[in-house]
Image (cartoon, rainbow, N blue to C red; front, top):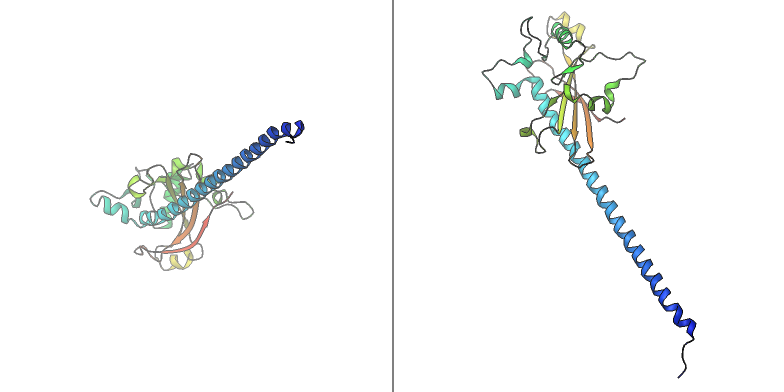
Length: 228
């Protein structure tokens, strides 16, 4: 019987080892691909969840503006978020007149916002608006109105909102001449954090107005997610 040359026997083991190494590398690459896709899917889902959470907070901010939330929770208690009170009080509140907004601005002092109520000074025409950047709001959670755990299924300390009250300059002259309350533009900003360890976040901003103080539904004029 003819025997195989010795060199053929010597190549068998290296060939098998190379094939095993290639199979191992292919398996690792496939596993890494699956792992990366899983991480990306979880991140995308977390980002989408934070966006939905931010959208769900917007009606809570509107309820706060019109006063239905506080009136329903404690009808017998004075509603300090909608009453300026006397000169000895310093709490922030939602103004109904230009004079009350001036009082709010005085009470805020060096603060831009307090308890989620803001009276931001508009930037000059040639200056960028820092309040259109998400990093600005992310650094201001101490001055926000936190969303309670009962209002979100994701728990406390995961969502906050601010309401910036600005006079509507296009309607103030007509309203003042009619001796009625001038309308305001409410810039509502919501910050929602995700649940992952490397938590994603969404900063959503919208402009909201109402035709009168009795208007509890109002109208939303814009909606955007802030980007750096």
